[in-house]
Image: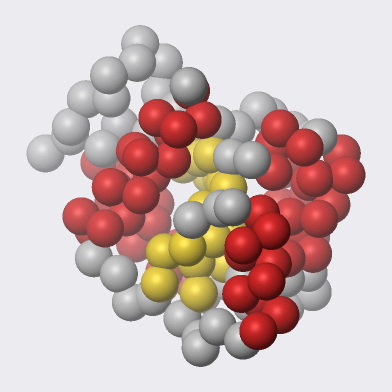
Length: 133
């Protein structure tokens, strides 16, 4: 059952996740909530998508091959700091000191894996509300 998004135009979300099964969960869950979802398997793919269209929110896995989430965030921040502010990070690993410092610096929320659909939807909607203020 599709839950209608409150905005006339669906919010666009770019999910950057190296695990196919998790990309599918993000895509299916968020699409069912009325969001327009695009996916990238790593930071390099995500960078090229940034040039193709505008996104309202980014969900970025911290640990990925080729370009990890922290590196992608830094690139986004250099190009347009406003883009970087629209980020939710995900991780299934133990958060080390470097990653913890990085997350504090960015102020971006972290969605820990494994997560359930309600947690995902809640963090996405809360982050979009925060951005729109």
